Length: 295
Figure (cartoon, one colour):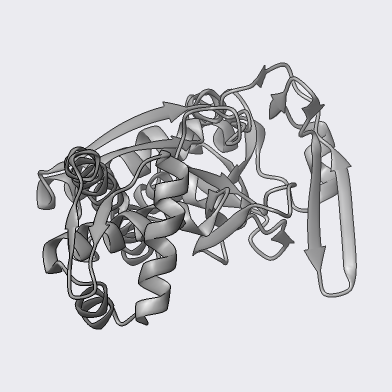
């Protein structure tokens, strides 16, 4: 920042009362110091120093400018300090976006634990299953399934191996039976997630070299992943959910994994930002905490 450097040269020259000594302190040649002073005098349209063969001293205008320049340098340094991050300080206010289901039921409880460890941290949360536009929304980082469509964004993995899982409640299975193959899903009530721009009714499965894609049809659709899970738990149909979304329900027996011998689509969970410089110590620490807890 040239103007800051010029002001620093001017202030040091006034302090030392010598161009040569100011250059020595700032590791500059006397010629460079003298050129800076002349440049400032041209910009300010006034003489800043009265020069003699042995010393220099400030003019009245120079004394006034010294006070103003010192205030400016102090303000700039304070501003730089305020945006530079202490690598050991987990504090400040960060704004996060996240999908509805995993956000509400998994990430938020973990963030509560994290904030208990770091009481100087403030967090704002936006829950939505629509992709938040990080370039226009006041959001620092977003948790997203899959890689972002915009290759200019930075996606840092939290859970690389997360996949989708077909699941149903024990009550649904007792009443309607369990599908034996992906093709059997066409005779079941499938609960689908959708977005305003697309429906997620294409369910894909993989077994060795075989790939099966079926069109899931049912009588319930929702643009909220948590609602889809709620219907599945209630026995209203079969869901095709992120494994992270239903991990606790599968472990507790509230839901049952179907077609376990078939693989499904991979949907890694990532932390997405528009620029690596937005990865503050707090965001880095949150990511590391979630990696530890979710893997």
